[in-house]
Length: 413
Ligand code: GLU
Image (tube, rainbow, N blue to C red; front, side, top):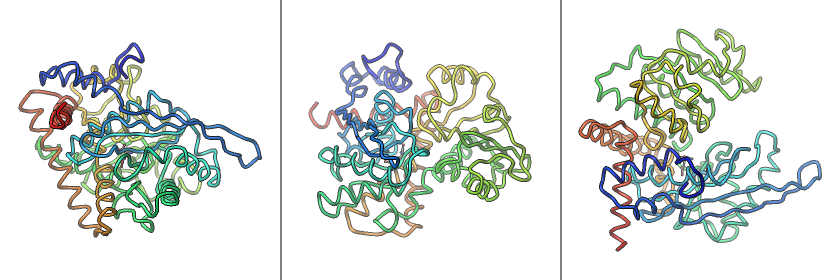
């Protein structure tokens, strides 16, 4: 982010442009570009083979003016401070855009969870919490699942944090249901994607029946997004995981793919589906392309070959700044991450509220509130984009930046 590298990040470009349109000065722009707090910790653990290994963990708290910092914890070999910083800042914009009383944060540990045992992951997670517990909690910084982590990881965080501070379920979200997790949290990001797509289609009077989608990613977001898009009547013709991709003209069979993935660890050779190279996925003609895996999936090297009409950013930052410009030139619409994947953090907010109030909501309540909050935010972005003749990312950043700036101002800054 600011002053740390030569080329501005996609986030910096979006915030800078929004500040310019809104007439905000350099102080606000700097405040929105810099993180409030950055933690880096070294975590030694004894591996199952008896050897000592040291992992580096990060937690970045970007902004807390609208509420405690909120955001996921990512386990992936490529995690570094630069990435965590940008993802933390995006969370500030996401929570502001959907207007929930939370700020932005993100964490990560550079590790490969697929090559680690459950015991190793548990020790690593618990040690991470031991190192950073003074900085996190229900009123300061609340972690949640992200790439490479899940409800079990959050369960360990909850247990470790509660061992120090007493039972504190509101200190972390995305927990197992048995530990105070919210109904509907696991599917929330995927379902949110479908809510946003449905609203977009309504606005553009675009019939969804007969439209097509391609999904990159078979993790929590990709899988549930594919399921929810299919429930809208959209034909999902292709999907990929990190090593393989499959296509089926009549629409993929998610149940069969899920069985194959569990049995063989890969989608490859699922009966009734054609196997593709994962790279070929983006070249399939479709209405909606949903990158729901890692950042920078759509870049200068592949953007010219895309054959979709609309990109729906299921992942965080899946389009590079350079590719974003090309997409605008090519007239491909982009529904930005801070809107498209906000379903997860919205239901995390519901989980936090339930935990603070010692309540348990029914799944129907969670679903209806998710639809209401995300539907409102989507309509607001679409209306602002149409009124000010802006692309959707710019419109979303205008709304989010204005909300954070107004909060900063209200504190007397
Ligand atoms: N990791 C998710 C995101 O990027 C969820 C964050 C949360 O629930 O706090 O939005």
